[in-house]
Image 1 (spheres, rainbow, N blue to C red):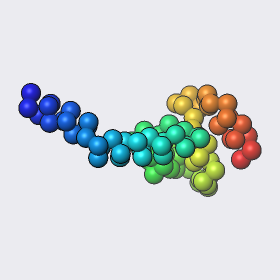
Image 2 (image 1 turned 90 degrees about the horizontal axis):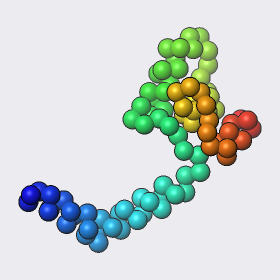
Image 3 (image 1 turned 180 degrees about the horizontal axis):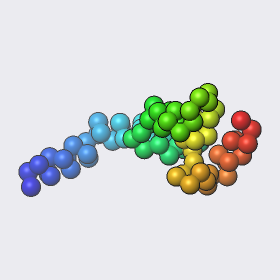
Amino acid sequence: KLQWNAFVASRLSPEFEAVHYEQSWRRKKCEYNHRLSRKGYVGLEDELEETMLGEEIDLSLLWKKAREDKQGNIFDPKVAKKTKLI
């Protein structure tokens, strides 16, 4: 119970609220959301190297693959439009 109360108090502090607001503002600026979770671009690149033997993996391919779901679909129309330009 004491740990929970300390946790809640830390999340309600003005310092945490300032950090939270700043990070929320940064997050809202992102137009094209990726779907990489903890894997990140490095993990995606490793995965593609295993499946695409001998082919060059450039940044545009990584950008596109990072925004696809597991079936290869892109649901955000803004992202789909941008992938057609690349």
